[in-house]
Length: 311
Image 1 (cartoon, rainbow, N blue to C red):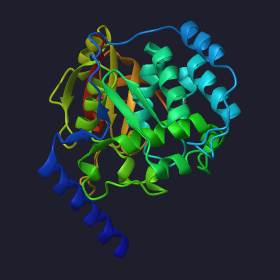
Image 2: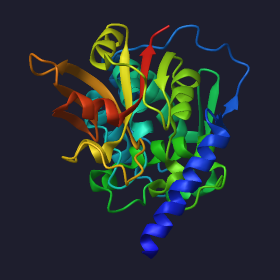
Image 3: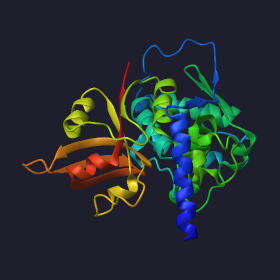
Image 4: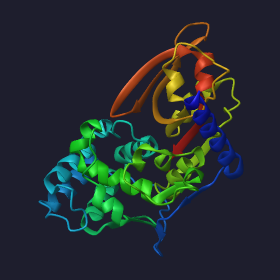
């Protein structure tokens, strides 16, 4: 009973914050006087790898005392060569940052590489008009995360994701603005729909078209056809209820459902002739996943649809 009471209070707090702050997103990144990206930056894997070769061997960082420079370069090189292997770690709330990073690695690997190398060297870096700055707790903690799967030996990913959660905020951070060790597993690191779209627009310089919200599903009877049309224009990211996606039951009205996860759509189609089932293939957690489910269930677990279109 005590557990249920605490869970109910948590949900009530979540809804209260949402109703008071829907659409709230802000960034503590510093805006420079440089000209913003008029077009979405693009580059090739070959350019990024050539830049890494020119960097050579990095010295031990005074900024990041727990980040091994050899493993750092190895980690960055793997991300550039195989973006699909990018892994956010077990039990973290890095999924939104992972989705955006995957898109960045696929479309502007050179921009990613320059940015993260500069972060390693200086503790701050610029991309377009935004300047990411790592706080002291982040600088000390990166490289020490454990029990996160292969992220344990991926110091570049630790440095990257921790810097991201330290710089980009949403209404979920209204009661907790300062990073503390372990916050990567809590609401501090979580991302609401507006925050995700804001990061894609202001950080990665994409033209963003979004439908849906944190609590209300997009009103779209032809959701499969809509996603298919959007994919012709750019990358499509879904904000959905990850837990319910893997449950057999379609609806449980006694429970409060909410979106918890961001995925990058690779393919979505009707599976059967009558259109009652769909198959979706998507990227998350360091690989691609394919699921078949009833169309009704799919419509009920999707809360947000975002098109990331190059300018």
